[in-house]
Image (tube, helix red, strand yellow):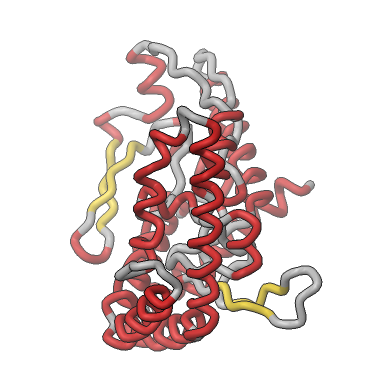
Length: 299
């Protein structure tokens, strides 16, 4: 029920990604080398699947208590997102180990969702909806960088649950931090150095028999075939094999061209230039609020 920032392209949400947050080194079992997992804002908006689930459950408990206090029934919604969906790398970076095990996560995510049906939506009264999301009389607008505005109602149980779990400033700090992450990512991808690095990666991919102009284009044909393949187990298995083969070539080309390191270098320069002192303070507040909520959840 509660919405959180999710990944920017439909199929990007299906990518397999590393668990570690930020520009950190994540070592695979049995491997001597480590791979960079590059994320905007040093991974401030990245959560492990376990932490994401803990926070989701804490939010749902707060919503349930708020709705109950208002005389409304509310069934806490289970966390159904998979690890690959919550831990996805926003740039589309892969490691050879993950690619070999799960490809891009396209077929794997389909199988996960097939075995984890979403709770059915039930018709609700206007009073119930107002209790949950709030009323127009208490609506406020948050102005975000780039001219984007976000509106929410301060008297809704969702808003009040967020404030209870994360503190009173969460409903402004969270959307600002997410917007900053999006802005950093977009600025990195517009960089001439990034585009040159992607051309090198694309040349490598072409040599392996895979034609793709960018990281998302490598996945697109596979995603386009998923709906038809889902109707036939043989086709689904075939698609899974092709997905892993393509992802392995993709990850190997990323490794061979040093793509993750290049993106990390560009991102560092972008953030140094783009983020103001106020932005950095907001990001620090965001981190602190999540860490505090996770500590509360552990008690």
